[in-house]
Amino acid sequence: MRVPHDPWPADQAEALRQQLALRERVEPGGPLPAVRTAAGLDVSYDGETGRAVAAAVVLDLATLTVVEAATATGEVTFPYVPGLLAFRELPVLVDALERLTVTPDVLVCDGYGVAHPRRFGLACHVGVLTGLPTFGVAKTPFTSAHAEPGPVRGDWSPLTEGDEVLGRVLRTQPRVKPVFVSVGHRVDLATATALTLALAPRFRLPETTRHADQLSRRLLGGLHAAR
Image (cartoon, rainbow, N blue to C red; front, side, top):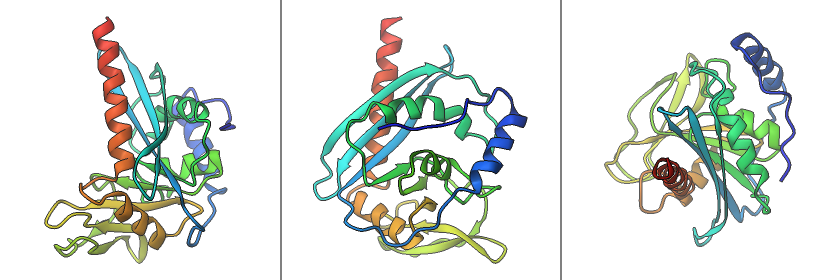
């Protein structure tokens, strides 16, 4: 699949300019028709060499089996800046996505969508670039206030900032720490919540995230072994 994009920014000022411009292209969404495949995206880093490994893993939603997987490696060229994390991850993520021969129905990011200080987290950015429905499932809260959801699988509480609802704090497994779901592009929050639960039948994190994380870590381990 092709992922068109502007040249990656060389500094924070240009990254912020791009982020604010791309934010205007985020599209709201509703329920998705017939989602058959979902792709998980994740990036692992080697702190010693400054390299990153990205994985994009497409799963069949009905069986949660792997349909296709693609990886990419590259140098980290953008510093860690809270709120601009997408520019650190996107160069290798886009390379991995472009190696897929299957176009998934929805993308699931290990991170945030609109639950972001400027309402344009990684899931929004990837969604705008690809044009695909995209949402984020994060492990920890980055911004916003929330109450603890109930203890039962499927319980949730709103993730808010002032009067604005930015996502949901979702319990995917009984009495296990919740995850933080926020929409990115062309999908609504109810659908993102339902898909997160469908993708997490046994564990806290969606299978899309688990597969992408494990694949990127295995490849990173292989790079270490080859040194």
